[in-house]
Amino acid sequence: MPTIEQSIDVEVPLSTAYNQWTQFESFPKFMGGVEQVTQLTDTLTHWKTHVGGVDREFDAEITEQHPDERVAWRSIDGKTHAGVVTFHRLSPSTTRVMVQIDWETETLTEKAGALVGADDMQVKKDLSKFKEFIESRGVEEGGWRGDVQ
Image 1 (cartoon, rainbow, N blue to C red):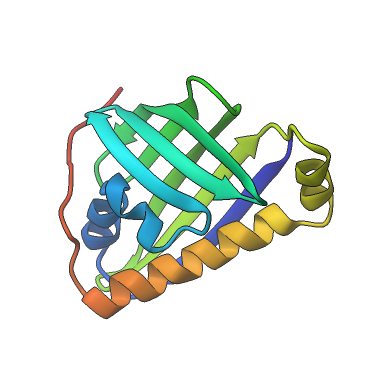
Image 2: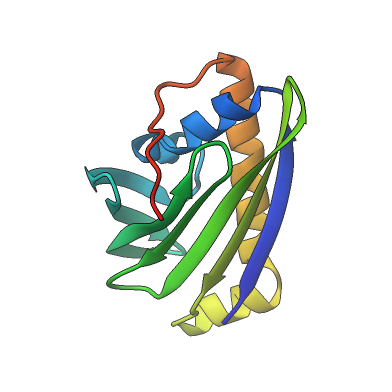
């Protein structure tokens, strides 16, 4: 099972970065291959993706969430994956966003892509797009500050 670890520093306050990340329905604006995310409940999301010519739909649950600190999730159907994103205050106006994702490759193409680091490159690209997105706005589109133990 491949593990992806990437981070990026964004020039916005920690709460701005965190609040925007909790707006899951905005993910298609900066995540490649994510076509739609629907927030079903505070802790349940439905995803539609198109990656490497393959369409997938799955549900994911938030397993842990602490405002301005972390959001962790795992898939509950479909493709097996889990991850966590953490937020680290570097200064009043700079935040480090760190992502760790564990996922199970299913197809030969996915296995080959993981071997050459395509998944790492995609997460790095997505984080760069998140940086551009949030820095160009300067403010979050919203935020959910609930705590999930």
